[in-house]
Length: 282
Image (cartoon, rainbow, N blue to C red; front, side, top):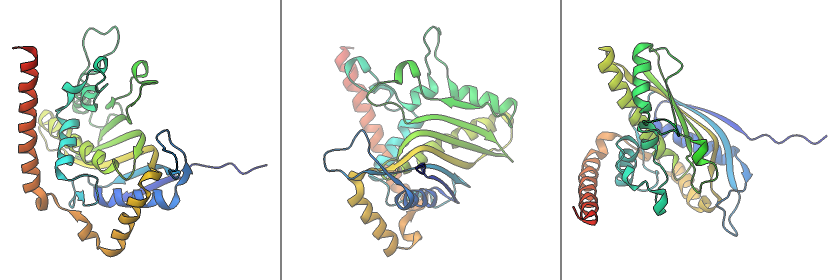
């Protein structure tokens, strides 16, 4: 009888986000199995793939940013604001061939056929945690089976789960699929900022300080695409050549770049708003 092939399950523990992400992608490279994807082009190597459970002890421990993340500080800040503030919710327009959803829209305005109003799931989470901080029911769902099955770009994030443990807000992000090398760090960074905001809102309601604490990143398919292998080899070489301190940023180190990005994003959003107003003829 042939031995059954198992998809590797990787468990990683880390003190901060960049350490956790780095350990996770290296584990995927070293222990992942070869599997094709629906995005492969002719000649691409098979992807490396694992199932991942990453536990970061303190979501806001410094250093908080890995220098090898895709893009730069501007891209990171744009994505954070997209998830947390919904700066691109106005791009949602499936009928016009534009975006079909955003995570922010699904969390803050989750519409269900037959329901007269959309559900603000984050409001529910804050209320649930305020009423019973130890509750196991405080979660946000992203997937809509009646809309997402069969669409071109279905949501990777499936749900967020929250619980208060020892005056710390624990959050778990559950993803069906996650591009380990080119997307996962940005996902973690933005999701944990949402964790911070929920902790602040619960603190206001409870009248005591709740800090963001443990962050869990749970992924069914945590993968490195074959088309990225050459870039990933460069990343592996950087691990050999640089110390961990040389591979990361503290928030303070890049705060001027973050502030500059926020100014640029504000200008861009204002210009988009003006363009929309002009197109309506207001």
